Image (cartoon, rainbow, N blue to C red; front, side, top):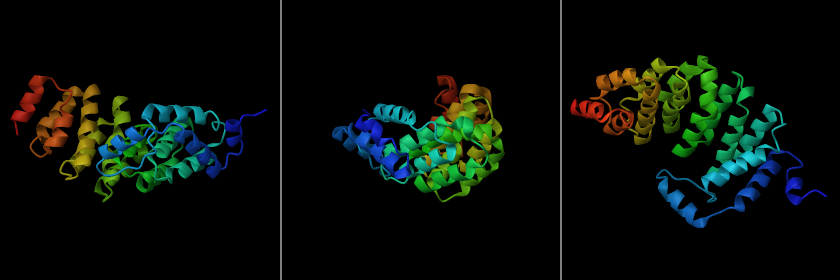
Length: 249
């Protein structure tokens, strides 16, 4: 006889699958954690209150039950989760999208871009999506780099932050440094502190594979970079290098 949990996954329509995920999340709510985490995000976030490691486990376990679905159906289920106001559901949707990365095609760019525009409302979701699923996509299909550069002119702060964070995967793979510098050039005077954090972080991660090139870039732009972005960018430099950069402004 099948268990009730197995029955809940028996009909993989969008709403039914989301309902099964929500039931599983609600088994692991931690109210103290929820209050602290919601207070941590200054721009606002709505949480059930499930700790991140448990959300990741739920994402992994639940994916086993839908992994045989075709990509179109799976992305439809992801979108059902993304429509939720709760951050944990978005986390699971982005995790599922990342798990089917081998099935990505160029046509997925517009859908992923739409998800970023429509469903991302805090830096946690922005970074999760752009560092993983969307970052892998861009690494595999660099013909969309100019589209990403266009995000730097957007009024949407998550597109601007995303333009930097999405580069991190490629940079860690040793690719697209010059384009990352183009992104930094476009964002260098951005007044949004979350965007400053984003491109500073991008430069910091670029310095892992390209330390001398990033050092030259930062030395050449230190006077115009906001202190917040600059401090992120030089975090991996030696104390002597950091002192030299900070002393030049």
